[in-house]
Amino acid sequence: MSTTKRCYYETLEVERSADESTLKSAFRKLAMKWHPDRNPGDASSEVKFKEINEAYEVLKDGDKRAAYDRYGHAAFEQGMGGGAGFGAGFASSFSDIFEDLFGMAGQRGGRGTGRERGADLRYNMEISLEDAFKGKTAQIEIPVSVTCESCSGIGAKAGTKPKTCSTCGGAGRVRQAQGFFTLERTCPSCQGRGQIIEDPCPSCTGSGRVTRERTLSVNIPQGVEDGTRIRLAGEGEAGVRGGPPGDLYIFLSLASHAIFQRDGADLHCRVPISMVTAALGGEFEVPTIERGKTKVKVPSGTQTGRRFRITGKGMPVLRSRQVGDMYVQVAVETPQNLTKKQQELLAEFEKLSSGATQPEAAGFFTKVKDFFGSRANTP
Image (tube, rainbow, N blue to C red; front, side):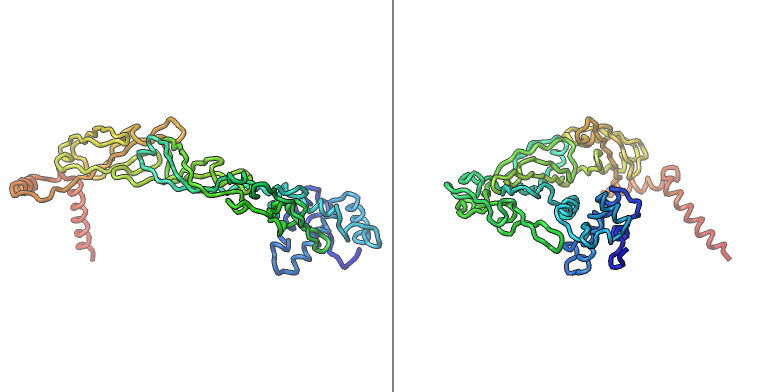
C-alpha cells in the first residue's frame, strides 16, 4: 500500500466495517467542518477537504471499495482509475451535502425565474387588559411593498421583457472549478435571478414593487397574553418581480392596568380596608375585569396581606373554555389626620386592649423578653 496517502478509512474516521449510512454521515460531518468557505484563509482546510472527498468517492462505490480493500491505494494508480480524479461521480457525492453547506436545495440544474419571496414584516401592537379579556378586531395601517401595477411585478418597462442572463444562461448560478471539484455560486451578473432587465420600469426602478400604506384588519382572540404572536399569511412585502409575498407578524404587548395585575389566567388586585372593618368584619365591593362588581366578605380579625379568591372572575384561557380566578388581597390602612376625639377613643381602646386582642404582638414581645433574659443569664 502506498505510504504517501492516509488510509481512506482513517481519513473519514470510520472503521473498515462501516456501512453506507455511516460513511455518508462521516463524510457530511467532515466536509462541513473542513470546507474552504467555512475556513477562509486556512490553506490546510482545502487539502483536508480534498482528502475527505477522495476517500468518500472511493469507499461509497462498492467495486472501488473492494479494490481498495484488496490492493490499497495501488488499486487506483497506473491508470486503474478511482480516487485520483472526479467527474460526474464526485458531483453526485458532493451534491448530497450541498444543501447542508449552503442551503441551496432545488437550485442546482434548474433555471432561475427572477422571482423572490417577499420579506416577512413585524408590527408591534399594544392592547389593554380589557381587550385581551374580550378580544377585538383592530384596524392597523402599515407601509408595505406591494406589486407594481405599472409592470405587473415584472420589473421591466411597459412593452419590454426581461432577457435571459448571458452569464449563467438563465440558471441563476455559475460553476467554478477548484482543483478536482466544482462549486456552484450565485451568478454575479443577475444575482441569481436568471434574468437581466435592460429597461427597468420607471415606477419601481426594476424591483417590481412599490411602497404603499395599507389598512389591515387584525382579529385578536380572547385570552391573548403579553408576547402573543399573530401571523397574517401573505400580508408581508410583495415578492421581487412577481414572487410570492411574505407574511406579517403582529406581536402583542399588554398595557399596565390601574387596578389588576395579570398572572397567566389569574388576576390580582390589592384593596385597602379600614382598621374597623378588619377588626369587626364586614364587606366591600371590588370591580371585575368585565366592568361588573362583586362583594368580598371580610371576617373579624382580618390581617394585612390576607387573600380572598373569587372563582371564575379572571382571564379566559386562549383557545379554551377555561377561565382563571381573581385574587383580592387586603391591606389594613392606618387612619391618619385624627381628630382629638378620635385620638382619645383610640387611647382608651389601647388601655383596654390585652394580649387576647393582639395575639401576634403579644407573642412577639414575649420572644423579645425571653431573648434579653437569656442574654442576662449568659456567663
